[in-house]
Length: 433
Image (cartoon, rainbow, N blue to C red; front, top):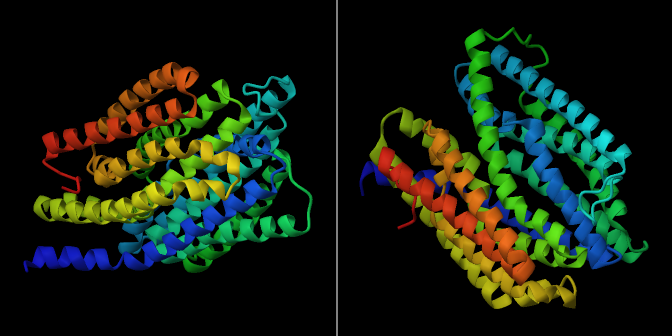
């Protein structure tokens, strides 16, 4: 066995604990969502809560604006060369950006609240107050998670961010299921906001304990460092934002065209389908530094072997999860309530799209980590246009099935385009086969 192949296999083995933690996290999130659906007073109220959660995920990307992904790159680089003062400066830069963006977002949301206008029938303007607070808390937690990954503590990062929140949700939901009355959408939002407050505080304490910069004075960063931080985080944020909008557009369009109950049915199916790519989403941020390092060293053969092995790993895991959904999906949906089984065929379509996503592996990160963010942006824009057109055409005719087809088409589109472009430009192949 060649040294390169052996090194690649050993590299993959160290991800087993992360996959174990992430598997536990996926199960806990499924259980948390199931219990939240059970304590909701109706499918319509749960649908309104899931719509709010979708808006929250989009807002968070704008608030953190790439500083969490930047932390993975810069903290890792500066820690290696013992530049603690520069890490402190980057932390200061990042937190100020999150606070500033959160302030402006809060002002806009307050204006929207007092306007009394409701863009979606199932999205009350009162949700905006909680959206601003929850957005800041989640953006802060995700930045701290990036710091921990950059500091070489991915297992601690997963335990702090990915396990604490679902465990807390399960505990609260179990209490209301046994003792409390059914909750409406605002009640569910309040519960999640309190849990985000606890999670954010824990991540603050953990990051400051394991990456202590208390006695390190953050020096003023040089102009070229500021320019690099701004350029890198802006490019990363743009691509992540467009990808999140594509991912969330199905829920938003469903809210425009369908009833709150149908939004809930579709959103539950979409979340279950994401299980197919849990390995990919878990490991992408950990794969990124290796991809960047091998590319910078000019080791394209080793990088291609690494990409093939990682893509096969996530594809095989994704294939197993797809089969689980194919045979047990209807029963899993039925746990939420008998009416949720209406979305079974939408679930199969969405899961198949995510299986194709896992086949192409870390194609998006290959583009980002090799300086080809522009190629990824173009692919995402093309995908967004195609998806939006299909949502408008198919949703009124086919309901949630139309939304699933449009979402799957967008996912397949950007993966195919990015993979082909990276093969053409850099001869880098992230496909499983």
